[in-house]
Image (cartoon, rainbow, N blue to C red; front, side, top):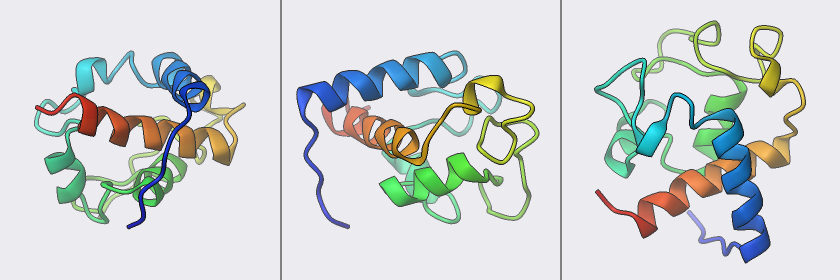
Length: 113
């Protein structure tokens, strides 16, 4: 994949979006609902389809599936598909999902496990 550069403003915005919509379950890159799968690069790479790219995370945030890619989990994971169940997702635009995705990947490169 290609490398993207975040400006300080983009990073601040992305962090705010992540903290507002994701951090309640993904504290410190973990995962409250499944302790075996976090937001670390190894876990992101192991998901099917991969979640180790901006596009992969955006796809997941639009329509989440299980780690093996076989089952829809939109009823239990906030997503655009399930915005009726997760109010914070109702106002999310695709650019917001891109920014959140870049922030997750940025965290992996600046705070390695």
